[in-house]
Image 1 (cartoon, rainbow, N blue to C red):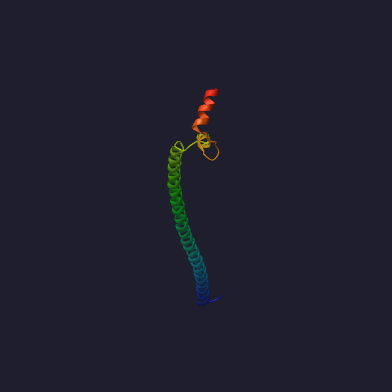
Image 2 (image 1 turned 45 degrees about the vertical axis):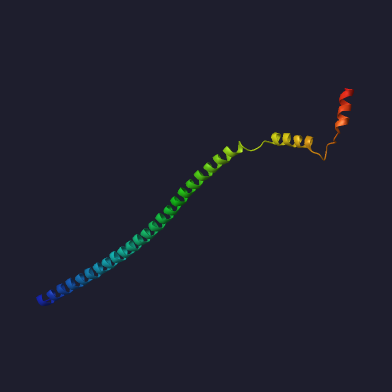
Length: 125
């Protein structure tokens, strides 16, 4: 039969072994938790950077849309001005009439009659 002292030593060694085993497992768990915390922090930082970039792009898009709205308003105003001015432009038929008048009065294309020839023609009629 083992002596009491030997038995106590065996029990104490077993307790130390179990304590060491538990300490090792606890360190491993702590390392895993630390690794998870580091990954989480990295993911949070990455997400914050992405959110900042997205917000910046959204701000740029919003500004572009506002600028386009201003440009469209300016275009509409200019089109309205042009439409008002169009009514003052001469129409094609008006220009044709003026051309015909110039043709009638053009000394290059017309033959002139003298006063005597005109009176002579008027007497014949």
